Image 1 (spheres, rainbow, N blue to C red):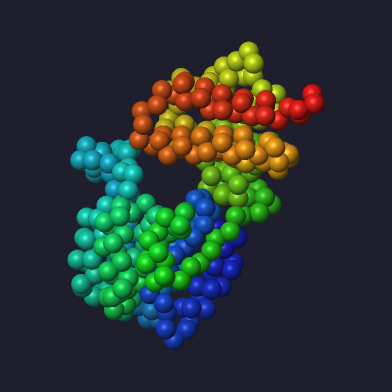
Image 2 (spheres, rainbow, N blue to C red):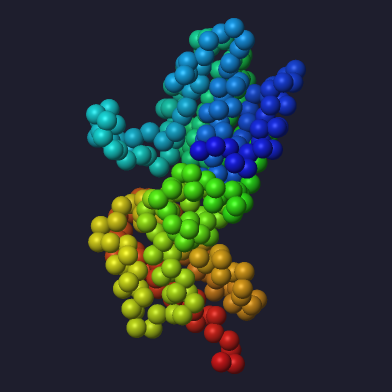
Length: 320
């Protein structure tokens, strides 16, 4: 993915890189899917490159990338065997401690190295506290790039020791350009639905297209706007999800429902807002539970549909 919408971030980064004293800690803040990871990897390569020293094309020995590990030993074996594997919910303290042991040595190729933690707001509390020690006394030549989808979840002491690069939502026009390039199979209607659902996140829009959520999006909007007293639309919604949807599709459906509710907020009266807020809160609860709870996919989509159907009643004018 190219760096659409990242112009200001690049300007701030390169100005700092050209300065006399580069700050050692950076937070890349913005919603998931706007391209922070790609930016971090490209920025890290600029940081560690030095004149006269050839840089490898692939994995770089002076760029450490830490993210969610496999969920358990069985998932680790799947990874090692080249098979799909399930990730743990959090970045572990053992990962940070292993990193710190490696930071006692000098960089391999030049005088600088970069550490990327993606996403830093998913660190265990003990991992965040361990990282804080490295931010307080950074090893010579070491720079930290902390990707944060929800910056408020980072420890205040970590935030205070880092500069922040903000990654705003991407415009609809730029989103359409990304989808036309990355998902050329999508029709204009599918791209329009993906853009509406993704709230400025190209990554979310691409996932939307790849998971074939266009019909689900249309049905969700119908449920909110028309209600579903005879359960017909909810039945169609379950059919569109399929009998055995992947965990990714279930999570995406919850996020899609949240986007549908947020879009409805633009055209409601003040008296309708509490119901919207309550429904959005219930969807947030589902989104938090879904990664670890073993939901029955059919019951999950029916619950989502029922939450959305409840909004149709709240949108009916009091005087008919």
